[in-house]
Amino acid sequence: MEGPPEELIRWTGFLLNWVAAHAHEAYEQVVAQVGLKPQHLGVLIQIQQGPMIQARLSDRLKVFKPVMVTLVNELEAMGLAERRPHAGDRRAVEVHILPAGLDKVREVERLSDQASADFFSPLDSTEQQTLHGLLTKLAKDGPAGPWQGLR
Image 1 (cartoon, one colour):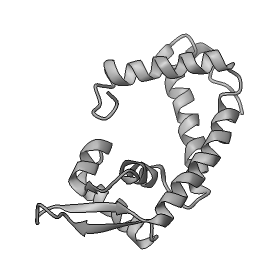
Image 2 (tube, rainbow, N blue to C red):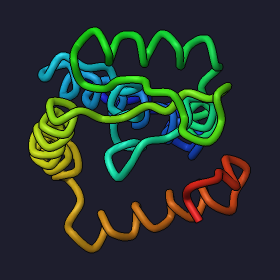
Image 3 (spheres, helix red, strand yellow):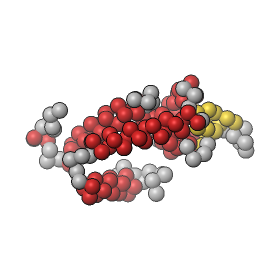
Image 4 (cartoon, rainbow, N blue to C red):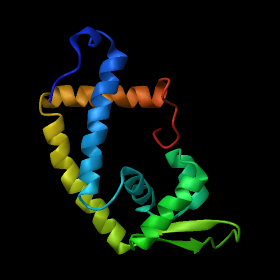
């Protein structure tokens, strides 16, 4: 793989976009190994500690409600999650993770650890921690945030 054009590497925003695009592609490939899309995994991660109202999932993941309906439909068809009526609000629907969904999350975590190690191998562990800290700060406090759920 060829690196970014030399004329463009002076711009941090360009470099961040370049690296993010390649990281996104690598992550999609990891998640695809277990038959999922990153958006599916996002839903499963959000509900692995307990059910969540479908509309709340849309808000938490910044996904339009009709797209969330499709994602949950797909997860139900795969036997990874299911909708159930909310006990206290008849208008609301909760999304519950199923045991197969928990298995998929664990499988992606295992694969993701190795893929992350490979992707970030040019950085030593201190540099990796620094990068993670800086990106977290930007996500929480910068123009990309504040994003509920990160605080």
